[in-house]
Length: 415
Image (tube, rainbow, N blue to C red; front, side):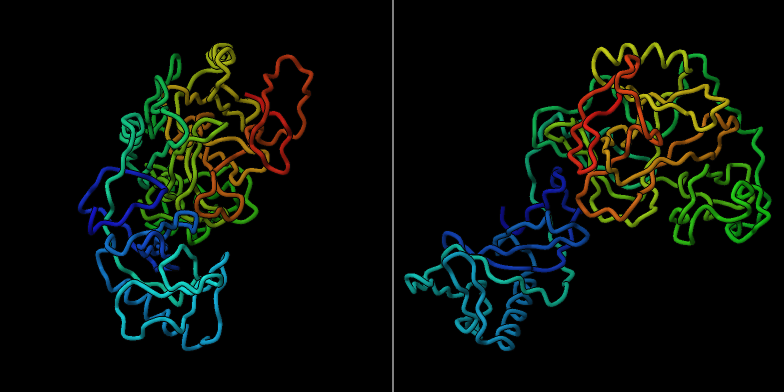
């Protein structure tokens, strides 16, 4: 389709004339079947999502002109240098200095032909350009479109869905939820009983007498940029609805929702997974594990049923060892964290967080990055948590073969 560039492979959606992707730069060009293709680097996306585009698919031709200019500058600096790829050489001296077209001559090392052949030149990237290009509509299965439709968070960044493996869509019986659903025999805590801090708006992080920071000896749980404080590994008490500090308080990271751009994608061996669209720094908040709050007894009943189908989304709220009453079940209700896969060498950890939880035994399970995570990398956590050793011969443990593929893979996990 003319005058429209193809969307990066991170996600597909119906054409929207007001929605654009931003091109960072042209990295390279090739001649293929008489057409010139340009390698596009999309702004804020990893190199694995670069795409080859025809010149007439690029709306603003100044992007091509800028690439030609940089190529001529490179040629003048390295006049005698050639870039080798396969059986072909790109001779920068053959570039027409007066040309503003998107073509170049190619000298084959075998035939000395000047015809346009398949080639790949050097990566010439002397700085980003910021030109916006519209997307081209691409086909999406109805199942994937329906899945993407329900994953529309009221708080946090947009979520996309990709399935290049099979025809699966929304999991049967699943409903998207960004809050806890209180199940049978579980009473929703009354926030009127919460005690809030009296700090002036936005000052909790520097007020050592803040009651919400008392668990950490008056120190902030977060840095000034909203990252988890280095070395902190205890429970987090964020400010609540009855606090005087206001919504701008730095002690409200988790409750403010996720800012990480994520994508649900179909894996070949582990069902649905989640990957990040952009790189994520270490100690960054990613998401909360939401679902249905059920009693310990109800969890045991459901566990037997889930064991038969080989799938479970039960997460015990057992941080307080002496008051373990509840479990989070994300089988029927949950947000994007429901689709986080296990890894024996994860890039995320789970932290207990108390926000508007009048009953502290119903706290939140927040995911933070353990290390810097690259763009396009799958987001994972260790299903075994802090447990170092499990007796594999114990018949009460439901073991299944692990497929995480990490170098530290144990070979099994518990579901």
